[in-house]
Image 1: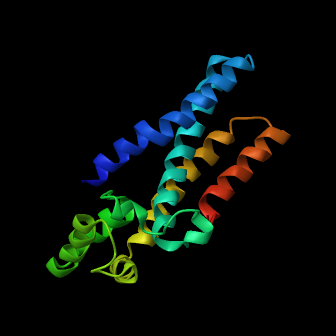
Image 2 (image 1 turned 120 degrees about the vertical axis):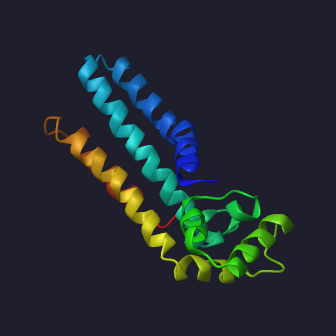
Length: 167
């Protein structure tokens, strides 16, 4: 899977849902077309960032915090952005380790921490966080078009929560 494939999946999954919800809320609230469009774009970028951070946390958080086993995406055969970035420069041996986890559907043969070491070695988690922050910055820029209000402050807070969350 390429970064472009992954981004398209996130667009159709999480970002599309966030965007549609914002548009419906704007319409229900009687917003004009420009406001609705801005809210739609704000939420799309928020959804992109949310999913990227969620996929990062799958490798960097704990089962207790996540409410599901850490490393679950890879175990289920899902290649997410941190892994895509790592695989771009991974050695053949590292690629085989990742493939072993995917084929076996478990971390029995390759410990989860070995996969985390591969991600760290290639700086892929930090790179994925940078990509997520890119989307939240786009959302912040869109918020500049809105007048100061409690709702605007709440939307800013949501952006902070998405990129700084640990669960």
